[in-house]
Length: 305
Ligand SMILES: Nc1nc2c(ncn2[C@@H]2O[C@H](COP(=O)(O)OP(=O)(O)OP(=O)(O)O)[C@@H](O)[C@H]2O)c(=O)[nH]1
Ligand SMILES: [Mg+2]
Image (cartoon, rainbow, N blue to C red; front, side, top):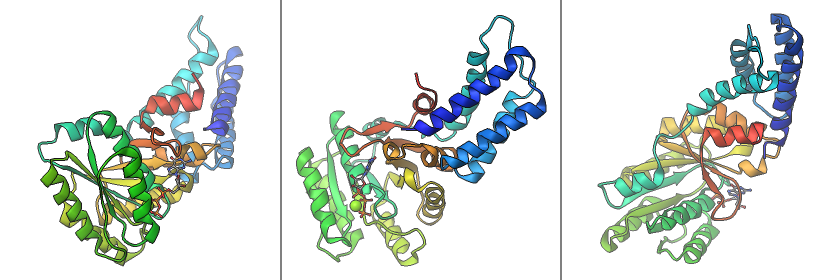
C-alpha cells in the first residue's frame, strides 16, 4: 500500500535535507523541489488540486527552514512534513468511535444505513462492520434493502450466516424502504441493539434512485448514514461524497480498497480532499480487513515506521 507515495516522499525528504546540510534553502531551490514533488505526485495518481494544495502547504511549512545546530537534517525535515500532513489528515477524522456510538446510544436499535455507488464495497463493508460490532459483543440484524440486484440478497444472506447473525431480506423488485423498515421492526421485537441496512448501488447523478434512497432514510431514521467510497476512484469519490451529502446526508465515510491502490495516490487524494469525515478504511476482502481511520496510520504508510 502507498508504495509510490512512500518513495516520492522519501526522495523529497532526501533532496531537501541534502540541500540543507550545507546551507539554507533558497526560496527558489525550495520551489524547484516542490514542483518536482508535485509532478511526481501527479504521476502517482494524486488529483491535480490535491497535489497543488499540498505543494502550497508544504511550501509555507518549509520556507525559511534552518536545521537547528546538532540535529539531523533528514529527521528534522521529515518531522516538519509529518506535522503538516498530520494537521491536514486530522481534519478528515470521524470524531466518534462507532462501537462506542452504538453502545452508548439511548435509542435502540441503533440504525446504520450504508449507501454508495455500484461496486464500491457496501455489502462487504457491512459484513466487516457486523463482524467488528460482534467482536465487541454487539449483535446486529443484517438487512438487505438492495432489492434491485438479484444476487445481492444471497450475497448478504451468506455473510450473515458466516457471522451467525440474523438476516432480513426482501423480494426482488420490492420497495427497499419497506424491507429496511421490516429489518428495524425485527430488531426492535427481538431486542437486537443494532441494524445494518444495505442499499443498492446507485449513481449519485441518478435522481430517481437518489429519491428512493431518501425514502429509505425517511422511513428508517438512521442514527448513522455511512457513505462507502472506493479509494481507487480518486476524484470521483470526492464528487460522490458531495452529491450524496447534498441529497441524502452523510455522517461518515468508509473508504474501501485502500489495499488495492498500490501506488497510493488515488487513496491519498480522497483522504486529503474529502469534505466528510472518514470513520474506517477497508484494506482487503476479509472480515477483519477494516481499520479505523487514523492519521497516524496514514503517516506510517507514507513514511514507514
Ligand atoms: N481489495 C479490496 N476489495 C474490496 C474491499 N471492499 C470490497 N472489496 C471487493 O469489491 C467487490 C465489490 O464489493 P461489494 O461489497 O459487492 O460491493 P457493493 O458496493 O455492495 O456492490 P453493489 O451492491 O453491486 O453496488 C468485491 O469483490 C469485494 O470483495 C477492500 O477493502 N479491499
Ligand atoms: Mg452490494
